[in-house]
Amino acid sequence: MATDDLVIYREAACEAARRGAAVLEDWRSRFQVREKGRADLVTDADLASQRTIHAYLHQRFPDHAFLAEEEGASKAQPASDAPPTWICDPLDGTTNYVHDCPWYCVSIGLQVAGELVVGVVFDPRQNELFAAAKGHGAWLGSRRLQTSTTTRLEDALLATGFPPDLRGQERTLEWWRYFSLRARSLRRTGSTALNLAYLAAGRFDGYWAFDNHVWDVAGGVVLVREAGGVITNVDGTLFDPYTPDALASNGPLHPLLLEALRGEPR
Image (cartoon, rainbow, N blue to C red; front, side, top):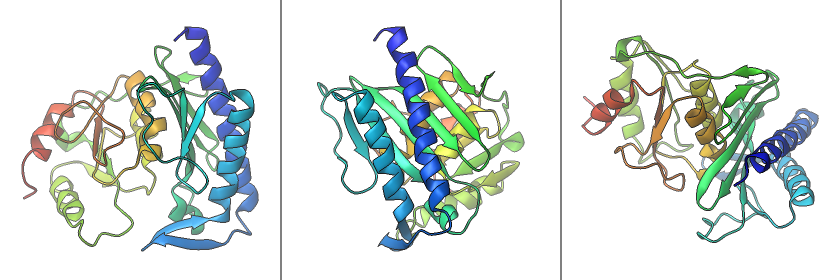
């Protein structure tokens, strides 16, 4: 893909994220909430944000496909010969949003020929726009991002994500205990996309989770890679964003985290 095209797509994703986030902020005082599953929330704001993002990207790129979390969008993995596909989470961190906790964002990624090549994460409460395109670096506004240089687990600030319903997923709690006893500290922000953006920015040193969806990670994958980080599945295999598990790090910590996750939490 031509480098100019990637820049165009990145800037379009930035504008789409801004528009989606403006909808979220407009809805903050008047949305209604329902459950998709136990503790898995969706609001009118999610849906309105997604429609706004889709409308903008479809107007700009009518031949592109669209995959997103909420109703009315495809959730199927694109075929190898699919057109460029925008992958969107119109509100990552819905529970935070519902409780007016300022840890939520819009996440947009672009997949071309099976590869994620553009990633944007926009946090409207902090007014932070993280953006990356393959070969063009990762940026927070005008500042180029670089992952941290932490090499020791005991010096690391790690992040993780929990599923909405922990019943049957208790290993998440076991690994929380394991890393709590070994890392400097842990964070559970409630937003996978922000976790990955913060990793790219050097704020977090590593991230693991067992219950992601592709729209959770699509924006953050490119950010992490372009900032010098590494992302794989938790067994160390090539990262597949359509599988639920992920391990991301600054790079130097990756072998240590992989070694731990290949064992049992004790």
